[in-house]
Image 1 (cartoon, rainbow, N blue to C red):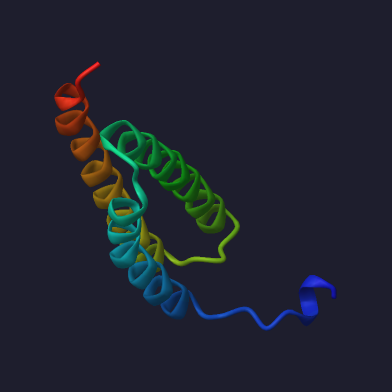
Image 2: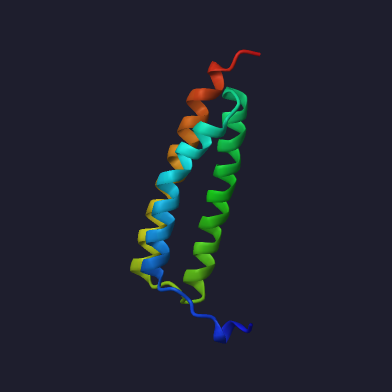
Length: 98
């Protein structure tokens, strides 16, 4: 299927889905971790994915797929999530007994 035939969702719907997923993801990480080291590893993956998402948001804005308000909203939410993940990693990592 070509890109012009895709039924692209509005950025508002995309934002709503991202927020739902982001709210569920920490519970998933906590429930599936097999210890603190695994928990940190899963959070490191989430941090990487969050950084990649922010990169794609920049590209979407640069190509005018997102307007400034949509970008700012998504960017703000994404950077807050990144700060939260980073903070959890920094506070949990020293507690791991080697």
